[in-house]
Image (tube, rainbow over all chains, first blue to last red; front, side, top):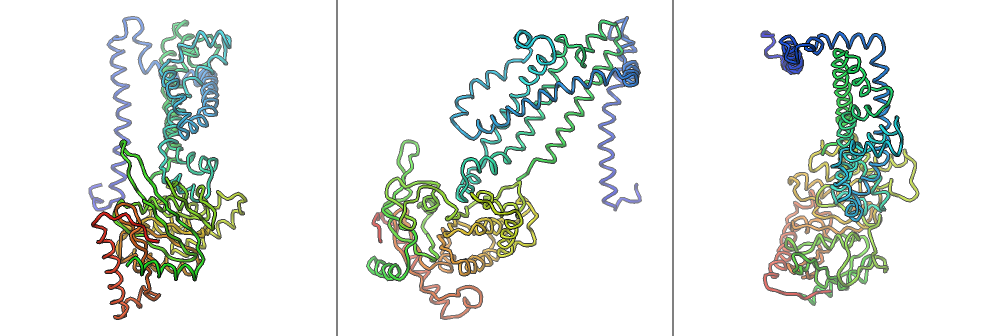
Length: 264
Length: 281
């Protein structure tokens, strides 16, 4: 490398590799600390062994191989995506209207701010009374947690659109619908995507407790199942899987934001 | 002075068709409980195909006047008639070029120039729209940058892009609000040539707001001077022959007349030191 000091391209590449290396190093250090803590039996004399990352990774490979992970991850993803889709269908149009029409914003402001502060888990009994135990109740809770960040971010985006653009569109003969379609909605896309990223995050977090509501599969269900079977290595492996899938979902969102957000 | 102006004004009016008639227009804003007069009893006509420049001190209501003509604001009292009918709102017949660039940052230059067509009641075909948009982008000299986004453009290029965007929908009236402010002098000169050429070929009517007197004298058929109370101070007819830009400007006799007329405009603005609220029509 020293020979190519004047080579800017290779220098940049080295810097980028170094960045990547440090991200990876963080993960490795975390694993090492975790392994040492289990070896020192910091998680209790009896179970520290099965709580170790090595045991968890072995269990994870086993679960991938015998199809158990897929069997539980797919229903979880299906529930989250259904909840999100239904939330998007409701929240984006509503958010645009709230952001664009001042009167609608005033009508909804207090209610929305009030509702978004309530954990969806508080609705759990009501969800079960209305929908019964099963998929629908879980999806309802996921929908309920996803709509607030979507509505609030979309309305924020639609509300801060430059009046200059709106006036410009008006002088070009645009009416309300044209302004919404060609100016307000595209202008709000970056905020919609930010809202989506937040919604995916909270949905994934709420998924686990929601799946403890008596559904027969899913990662949340499997956490309880491994506990009941005293398979703490599998429990840790499921936690790992939940974190990894969540990370991947968030990365997909970051890619969407990078791809579809406009810059000034 | 007033008499001379009104005589000249009448001579102009009688020869050419009145497009917009501004009649006793006042506009007041309420700010912190106090009334603020942006425009005070302004009466004048805008003639078909003329290049009308509005000058006056900062905050005298020049921009307000354009907003009223565009129909995005309405007079507190008085009326504005376009071809004899009152202005009730914005319309594609009046294209406005705003002081700040009003380009949509998520659209390419070409897509921005196509925007006006997308608002039409009977939309044209895609390739037809593209051809029209391209024609005007070429006209303003942006043919080489149609796929760039506004964020990648210099100030001058943004001006050209917003000009093409408005020209493409073929407005009868072009309203320009400080359109060439904040451009470097070379770009400004080019833009003066471009706008003059476009005005001559497209035969639209231009109402151009500026605080640059050189610019006003170069471009205007007539110059409207507003005073700091928002009242009409004078309407001055610019009798300098065209072309006034490029090599023509180097003629010594022309140069003297240019300076003399600019001096006249300057003196009218300076007189505004005292409080006068008369309207000349």
